[in-house]
Image (cartoon, rainbow, N blue to C red; front, side):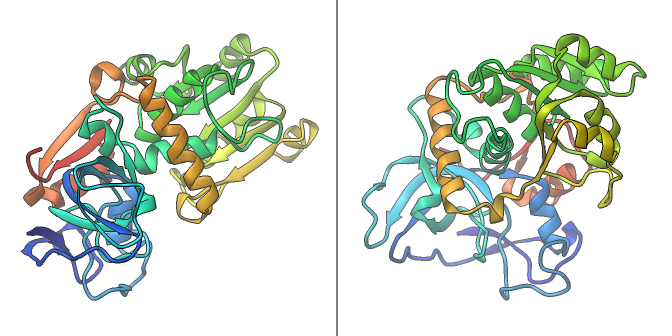
Length: 342
């Protein structure tokens, strides 16, 4: 089978196309014929040494956490999936040497989730890291829900920073599905159009001097949940618009590894700053996210494509290095890799 591999950390030039023997699924595992592989910042950062440092935990690694395809084989003890099931994959390469940038990949059965009828492989490959991160970000409010569904966020206001990105896009869609009023901060008219297409009720350009006033005019009592991509850049704005007992869910370090957070304004409203990383939130939270995201798919939520606010940039499997570069260069929307025909 065709597989993208690397045996040392580095820039995208360490990736190469190789021919490898398919693995057989072990107990509790399934093998999936990957149709589409999704690329996230975590994929190129891991490859570049941000996760593993100067060494690798395995002699050879196939990258990419997310993907979608068809179950090809099942291992002993797997009852919930069968050969022929269409599935979406998450955390395929977490703690394992082989991700989705290959024609056949073996994963724990818990990381392969059935795709509802009519849901495309493009949508399936765009879930994983973005949608499950967004789910976690929306379920950390001390007075809010632990699960998402219609009505779960009724009466709450959610501010999504960077609504034109993959996580922001998923957060907008899930928050609106759950009944929240959704505001997205953006940096241009083009990105405002994408956030609006995703379902944001309001957009505000965070570069404008009156951004806080604009948000407060929409949410006079403040914002309950902030889905935050760049707290070093947005700390002051967030402090000015957060509601009493509001939570700031920080899922990325865009803008740097250090931030200055104003103490008194946050103290006066009992603010909560919740850092989150998908790989360490635990199985219970992962399972809840996978179930709720799939339920959202049944309701027609989380579409992709420019009309849905998430433009797609496509690459062939042999061009995985270029796909990684596109994500590293902040290509707007979602980067997908066509691994093989359906």
